[in-house]
Image (cartoon, rainbow, N blue to C red; front, side):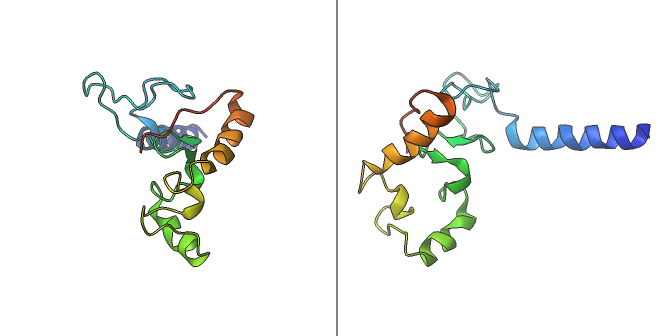
Length: 119
């Protein structure tokens, strides 16, 4: 029983380290969760595993720029902007108002506006 509990705890600890070890603030929507510890002030890294992708302004689960395995699916649906290399439904360069659709999801979850995409 103890061995099983210990192995479960070790597996959980390993998965947490693999997915979120660079976070400064664990639960900070819009906070500075992307500042890497020990890498110097202002040094940013993209932290995957969060609900929202700050860099691209969409939920992480549909972010084709962070999850390249989604690209084929978007292209198959004819939802692709070749000019900006991202889903057309997420191309805020061609259609800035698209961000409002994703921002509404963020507001519904956190009760405040999301950070502006940085990329």
